[in-house]
Length: 287
Image 1 (tube, rainbow, N blue to C red):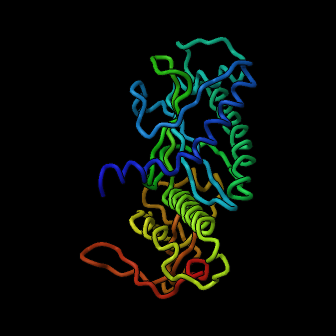
Image 2 (cartoon, rainbow, N blue to C red; image 1 turned 45 degrees about the vertical axis):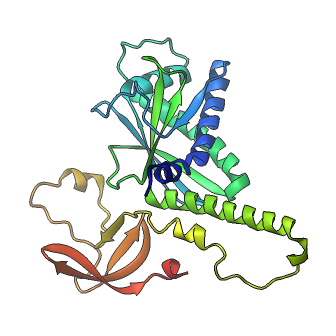
Image 3 (cartoon, one colour; image 1 turned 120 degrees about the horizontal axis):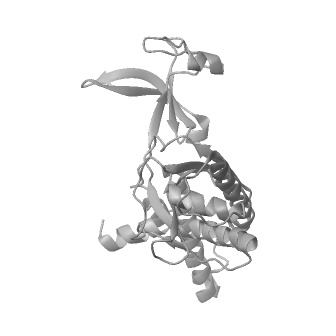
């Protein structure tokens, strides 16, 4: 893939992130009474604080017409400044973020996500957006990473790092590809009125949109079973403890894509690595 093609592919989800930028600007602007510039970037801002122990993580889950996950990373200084804005506290850069500050940022992100959900409805339909604080970085590798720069560049600028799951990136790219196909069809109809009555199906129609999704990498997960534990039981776990799952050893295991069941099968060993021999495809995946 050429650099130009890779850059274009990376930029495709920015339309969805621009909704986040506009919504963030609206919420913070209402609090401060002043306009706030928020810009979506496909490259990290030059003054962005690298990942560290004081980072704040938030998990954003989209469901409904648009499905997938996003992980947000904020440096400690950004958490402090946003919380002070949201809580109408005086700016004290030397302070350390507290639990109250982190709770304030979660509430701020939830207010922003409410506007995102309302705005996204016009394009995708009903989209539910759930924001929760995450204990650490996600276990799944982001399929796309973007940054929301708040304010001008400089030592006092703020930035939110967005890591998008493969499922969400795929849906956003499919939506854009489908929109392009629709635009081409509409243009063809407008330029060729004599063919507007021809309803024969073209098997090659939309092939380009599908081809653009073939190189998307998807993170797959095997699930051997589940178990619900009381908090006291979790705290009592020690090395060597055994947690019994709700599935028999002879039962098939689940193959998950972004938390959704796509197939079941039996575990095999291939060159010393675990593998899965698929025995059943989920109806949801086959549809």
